[in-house]
Amino acid sequence: MIFIANWKSNGSLRINKEWCDNFKNKIKLNSKNFIGVAPSYIHFQNIKNQLKELDIKVGAQDVDAHGGARTGSINIDMLSDLNCDFVIIGHSERRLFFGEDSATIKSKLESIYKKKILPIVCVGESYNDNKKGKTHKVLESQLIELFSHDQISQEIFIAYEPIWAIGTGLTPNSETVNEIHQFIKDRVQFHTKNNIIPSVLYGGSVTTSNIKDFSSQKHIDGVLVGGASLDGNTFADLVNKIGD
Ligand code: PGA
Image (cartoon, rainbow, N blue to C red):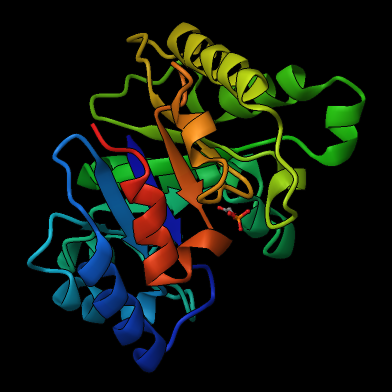
């Protein structure tokens, strides 16, 4: 099972030290699990140092597709310098608050492929699209824009994150998520040139109470966790619920 902690714009040196101490005390590592943490860029190296004795991946929450005269941005060469293990792109908060469209996200993805870093590509429908029964249609068009005709020679993760489930305490039921993940795998296989099948994570109000339910579904390969990952004890509890 894959567990990714997305800390968003949270954390401080003090909070992160407490997180790592609590997490290290509590976590029961299991070689079948892939565990990743995405702190802010500014805390990246600090977290990497604190977790270095554990088999935990440390990644970034975003990347700029280009370098050079782009004030305030971080590019993939910089992340690669720091041995960044994965990069999340296309999160709905980036799409909404930073105006990122599929073309922007696709160019980020291409820059990540060049460095062979693992991308975690987020897709998901809005509340209105969900209510109108358009979830599959929206997802298929997002997937076509990002992957169509690509020859992908590395592992990729896709995170299915219904926008209405992020930070709200609402979730689709696990059977519905399972069916949607199967659809995502099928569509990526269909649209990529070399018919790859990605691992698909679910994100949106994952907690210690619902993790077992999600993890029991065949096509839910992992979870992307926001709020419930901000406390080291809680995130360790969440991971520990899934033994082998
Ligand atoms: P949440 O966030 O777990 O707080 O709903 C998930 C995400 O945005 O990745």
